[in-house]
Structure formats: structure tokens, C-alpha cells
Amino acid sequence: MPARRALFGESPATLDEVFRSSCNAPGDKIKQVSTSVVQCRILPPPDIAAFLLLQYDGALEAPSLIVQKQTARNDAGYAVELSYFAEVIQKSGKPRRIYFRQPRLDVLMDGLLEASGGTTIND
Image 1: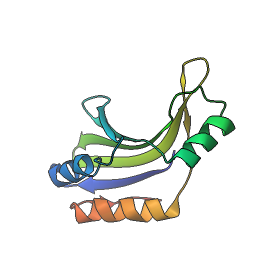
Image 2 (image 1 turned 90 degrees about the horizontal axis):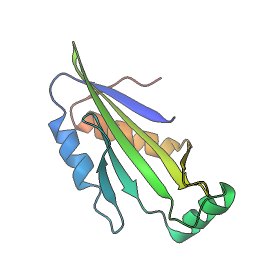
Image 3 (image 1 turned 60 degrees about the vertical axis):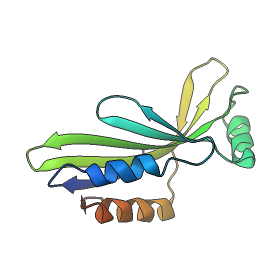
Image 4 (image 1 turned 90 degrees about the vertical axis):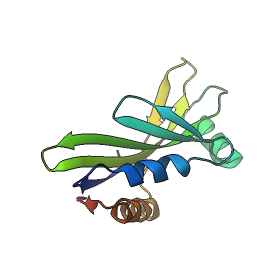
């Protein structure tokens, strides 16, 4: 799964605020998956939605592009991971995750992590 990681000495509250406030386009939804995982679920443009449905044998339900933030506390402070993927509901009703790498998105995420006070720890 494509992911970008950073360490924070203190609570990454600024990153939390930016993450939630940037999930504000029409069709975007915040989903709190667990206490440590939050997702921004983005409605893709029609051409990308059609591609995902046809390519991955999806049900006639809109796929989502997902940016996920996972936070874990450790001895050094906080470890944060930002990841991204597409999710297509299959005809069986079960979701299928499709992972893809976007170098421009990686750079954007690294910039966000660093601007929010984190030190990136990517490979």
C-alpha cells in the first residue's frame, strides 16, 4: 500500500485539523474507522469512476478514492502514516481496495507531514 510516514514529537493536532478541513469538496466524507484511523473518502470524477467500475468488475455503486491517516503513540511521540487507495464495491457487496502509486501525491503528502511539524521517515 502506498504510504508516507512521519514522526511527531508532540501531538500532530495541526495535521489532524488540516486533514479534516481539506476533505471538503462536494461528495467528500470523513469516516472515523477507529480511534487511530480516519479516512477522507473522495468521490472520483465520472471518467475515473467508470474506469474503476469496469476495470475491477464493480457493482453499480460509486467507487471512492481514499486518503487514510493512521496515528500511533510511541516512546518518541507519535507515528503518523498517510496512505491512499481506491475502493470499489464488488458485485458480491464486498469492497475491493486498489493500490496505486502517484509520485506527485507522495511529494504532496511529505510536504504536508513536514509542514505540520513531522519528520518524514520514508524509504
